[in-house]
Length: 126
Image (cartoon, rainbow, N blue to C red; front, side, top):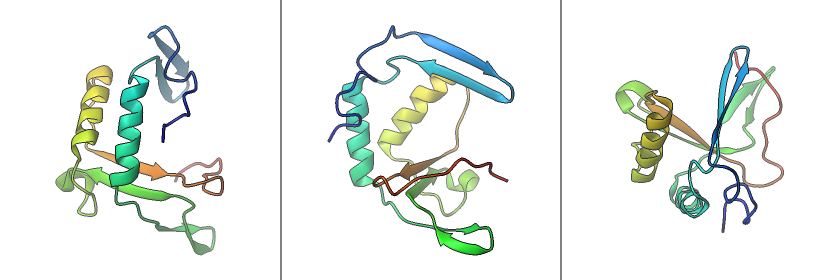
């Protein structure tokens, strides 16, 4: 299985960087940040080796099962005891992103949308 069924997402572009300046948002687009073959390898590894689980969340006046699967990784001292230890693949990705952004990350939340029924509606977190 490939991440995007060989679309041009990972195979075209100028390998350039474009920064968007929006209020309260820093957004940067990097063409070819991770080459397609490498991205597919990460995708397949994470898809098949992650201990995905469902979780319950409050929505309005009831508790519902979130329409996606998740896995929370990070440093237990900083990200919480419920986090999983970093995998070699996630450490590689973290290093690439930290090098590019100049930021440090102590955790990552992976989301798996299994099919067209899994989704997140437009919302604002509290």
